[in-house]
Picture 1 (tube, rainbow over the protein chains, first blue to last red):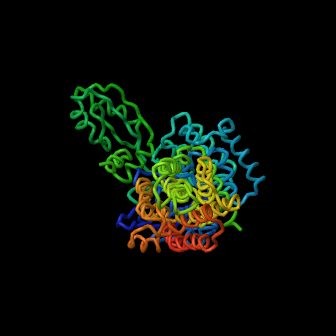
Picture 2: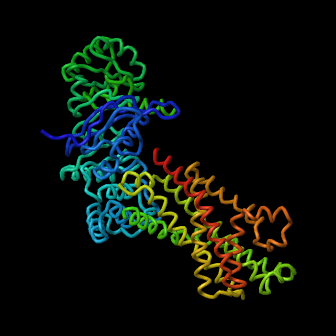
Length: 319
Length: 255
């Protein structure tokens, strides 16, 4: 049975302006586990992570990391964690190697040990060639990698990653995912926030879905998807046929909002429904274009639990 | 011990970055050097200056420009702090077990070293223009130490603005506030030649004590009282600005 490296209980944060960013979040991360906080921008993921990383004091609730209370013993918590922040906070006129040396020294490594560790990490992240260039010349992906490397100088037991691949191009994202999985396979627990469903699906052993400051669902990606319990059938049509098709298919399952020329139907067994769907549509003289069936995605899980898609929530935030 | 090593690690980082942005070196020296070159000619024939010290307006004015280069340059700590907060580097430090005080102390150490070098640069320019330094090399060293200390204490002002506003523009603009104090100081005329009310102002204007100490070392020799007053003025400034800066820093740490 794995031990928990991190537990938090009813964490809350109300900012001085009265904004309740986090309204009672509880979860735990096992030793060596990859745990994700999935939710739209503004859901309270970053605030939660900043409380767990000793950057913000919780308004109430408690959290322990590696056995240390984040409020009572923040110094011990800082020794146990590595933290790659969202903005990859780097000193832009310093080089990649200088960053690693500096962070290693601040973690108490001797000069010689810091040099050795910096060399190791530069090799590990494929940054040797650029090690002595100032980070202001780095690409987004390289900045993320050096930031990640900075979080690892002291071989932390758990690494926090706030939106690790936001603003990173697809190729670098793939490479970062590979690196994170390798780290995890070597025993480092990961706590990451993301609003990318694919990222949560690919990286996380377990995850908590956060919306408006509370956890609305938690479990393994597979558990969460099977709780949705339904397949999704997408019926593509001519635009003028949509109304008739919706009326004809209503009784077969749950109709979902969709773009103008398709009907989305949630149903327990998608494959079996296809025949019925085609028959019903034929009865009202509608011939569908395609009728693909998909297994539930985390977006469906999010929709099921909050009544909105992640994209729609972010639209609200922006409005 | 952790405080000392951490401060030095962070001071080394800030110091290393300075020459990588040449404007950070050139800008604070630009105005003092310009004033030195222009005013030394403009004021060359004004009697009060000629009679004030060892003969030339240049010798008299150099002390004021040394002080100005320290004042203008002391915005460095605040500017670096606000940049680090802005970039997220400050947060990166906060998630590490770095000694908290070292984050501030590191910047102040860098400024002390940098500003003593500013003073040296102005002295070299003045020397090249023909100014003399009565106390010689030893005097130059004392001027550098005094300017480093005074500058680090004065940097507490920019740190306060930086930590209380967390706004780069305000922090940069805050540096302008030094000019009224500077123009009302003994930079351009000796205290005895100032109108009565300005003489009163200058009994509490720390910049004048710095200028008078530097001027004494350049013009007349080891006037220990003047030099002592310069150091006391630096410490008096620090006694106000630094505790306030640490308080603002505590608040910034609390998030």
